[in-house]
Amino acid sequence: MTEDARFEDGIERPLNLGAFDAEDLQVISALAQDAVLPVTEIKWQKAQRRLGLLVNRLRREVGTPDVERVQSLLVIDNVQGVSSQGVDRADRDLVLQILSIDWEAGEDAAGHVVLTLAGDGALRAHVEALEVSLRDVTRPYVAPSRKMPDHG
Image (tube, rainbow, N blue to C red; front, side, top):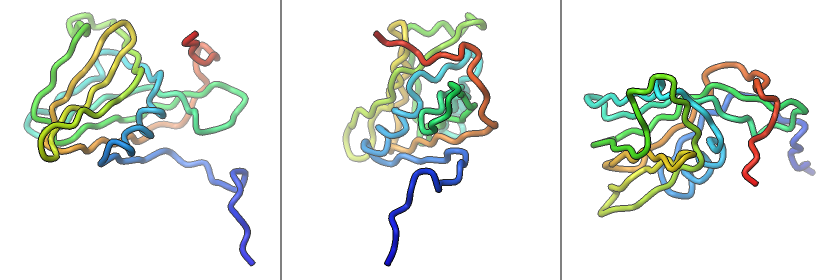
C-alpha cells in the first residue's frame, strides 16, 4: 500500500519553473504577483532575443510565519521586440510592482507576453513563441515591510 505525499514532507527548494503555454504562464503569474524590482533591473538582450528581470518576489508557496521574499530571475525568451507604457526608464530610482503576467496569442505560436504593473504601467514583449521562466537565485529573506501587500 502506498501513502499520499504530505505537504509537510516536502523539501524546501528554490523555484525553477518554465511556461510554454498560457496555462503554465498563469502559475508563473501567480508566483510573480506583487514582485518588485528597480527599473534598472530590466535587461533587454536584443541579440539573444531575451528580456530578463531581476525581481524580489513574495514566497507565497511556503507557509512560514514571516513574510518572505526571494530574488528571482524572470526571463522571457524568443523576444522580437519590447514596448512599455508608464515606465520611465530614465528614472533610475523607479521601483515597479508586477500585478500579473498574461499571454496574448497571435498567429501560429507568436504573440505577446504582457506584464501589468501597478500604477497603470505595462511591459509588452512580442515573442515568436511563448517561453517564460522563473528561477530563484538567492536565499529567502524576511520582507523589509514584514507585511503582505493589501489590494483592498
